[in-house]
Amino acid sequence: MKVRNHILLALLAVAFMASCSEADKTIEFGVDNNSIDIEAVGGTRKVNVSAGENWVATSSAPWITVLPANGSGSKECSLIIDSAITTSPRDGYVLFINTDNNTEYKRVDVSQKGFDYAITLDEPSVNIENYATLDKRYFDVKVKTNVAFNVKVVDEETGAEPSWIDVGQFNVNLDHGRRPREVSLRITWGINSTPMQRNARLSFTPAETDVKLDRNDELTINQDAAERIVTGRGGDSIALLGIARSLEVWASDWESSGERMDNWDGVVLWEEGMTGYVDSLKGRVKSAEFTSFSTKEGIPYEVQYLTAAEELRFYSNVNTFQLNLGTGPYICELTQLKRLTIGAYGLTELDENFTKLKNLEYLDLSSNNFEQVPAVINPENFPKLHALRMANNQRLLIYDLSNSISTNFGGLYQHTKYDSAQETFGEFPTWLLKWEPDAAKGIAGLDTLNLSVNYLQGSIPDFKDDATIGYYDDEDFIRPDTIPAIHVKRVMPQLKMFALNLNRLTGELPEWILYHPALDWWDPYTLLFTQEGKDEKGNLAGFSNTPVNLNYYYEKYTKKEMAGSSSDQETGTDSGSQTGSR
Image (cartoon, rainbow, N blue to C red):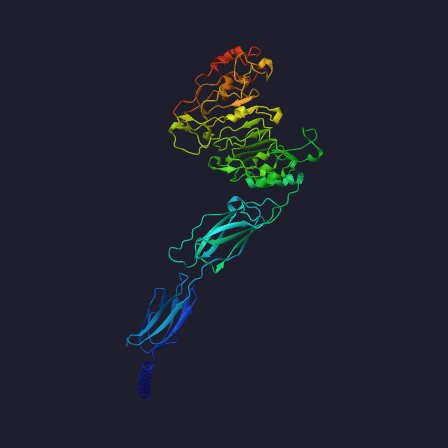
């Protein structure tokens, strides 16, 4: 009985399979969609294939892919359509072919729109804070575009190009067509030192003038206002802490010490009895110094709030020889300053508003990277200045200038560099040697000038042919006991300190130096006569008429006492700065 049932079931299965096979053969070959319209971005579309036999699919264009590309019987296929490249629309098709009958096929037409010319942004605005450290003062903007473009930045308030926004270099690569590419723009920004928000607008224009954009986004940049610092003792302490923070002063413990500002290292406050004291200055910062720090910018913006300070000192930045910094504009607001030191900072230029510091009496710009004395440093701009120090402006030590291919090495080199065509050295910064008192113009005149350890070359000007400079015996400008008994040019007789040592100077020492009323006070054998290395012509630096001692000098200054001992004079080591009287 069981055997009979199994035979019956087998016969029924064979009959069912035969009927299914006949049914498949009767399915009409076809597709459920004969055309596809798609946007420029592309995508995937489904097509159902009806078939009882084997079939294959083939595409007319490389931008259309069919998966699966063949099959047996009915299947669902995916048509993967790439993103468009150009602004023009494009057409293609897919053929589904019955492999048992090659003459039988179905066609699916594909039409794709082209991209419109557009410059688009994901985000239309960016908000930034008023302050961040230099390495964090930037943001990136992703721009989608199928056209090369230029960028313009406008300050919303002034309508001018803002100095606090800078767009870095970028490249729009359309070599492989004009489908929208994503271009990254790095925007750097500056500190907002004002207590007001500021805004800028960044717009894009096609590089090709005949291109019309269907969409053109703009970016709005909103920057927070700075914390308002109130003028006064409390504002001074906030300003000092802000400067130390911005400079990244290493050893500053002002904030962590818990001490009152009265006890902060390097800070002096105004007190009764000090010269220039008035009640409104009581407890405010009179002077402050910042040393051993790390910055790649000018003097921080908080400095402008130290409106009672007479003296500020910034000294010893990290890797100064690698830097090309300016002072920045904020220090220029302190028009009351009398003494200013910005040394070993990495300066190569002064801000255009530096001339606002007309009350400066002492200026030290030593150990920076200047290649020349800034032209703005002159008696007209700084009538009260009496001490100027610009020593050691060397990025690197070059012993032999004639055998060097280095450039941009500082040292006031640009003044006296050698002109091989003319076979002459450039001109010494002569105006500094004419910075004399002028009561009619309110000019104090320099009594201290230090240009040591630079790369000055050639000879020191002798002024023999300069009719604007007279002689000591023509007019009595100084005390009679300091007039030399010799006919010699009267060049800056008020100079109390003059240093030119360790330059590359050659030639003769001019008479105005050899017989200057203060020569014995200048420590000339250390700070003037001593030169080093070779100049650009290969000449060994040093003067051809350096005196062995100062005996010749005191012979012409009969009213003076000889400085130092005779033995010192004979060896040429006397400084002449201890016991001389004038």
